Length: 104
Image (cartoon, rainbow, N blue to C red; front, side, top):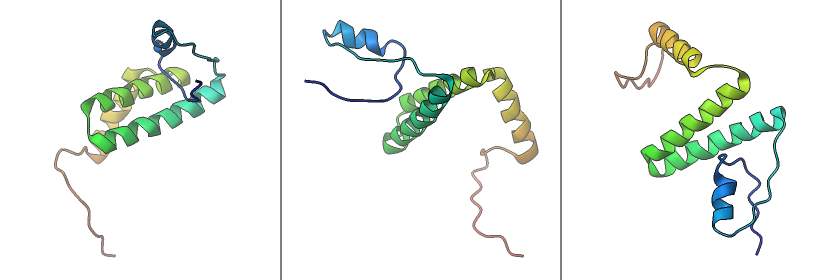
């Protein structure tokens, strides 16, 4: 029986499948397809986190973010600096502020 996935998977998944006695069919993505599939994977992981609020899903989201950064030639330190700079200019979410309306 053949099951179709057509999705980006972590590097060790083909080995895990093979160890179970199954045969994975894979291909290596070009840069453009890789970035597109990373975007798809990011949405998949966010949806999974939203569904069950499991912290492990946040780790998966972070792994996808690392993949996107690597593909774009950006370090995690550079991303963290951007995050900190933005937090200094616009704040973070520690005060739990929920904006309801703005009157002009």
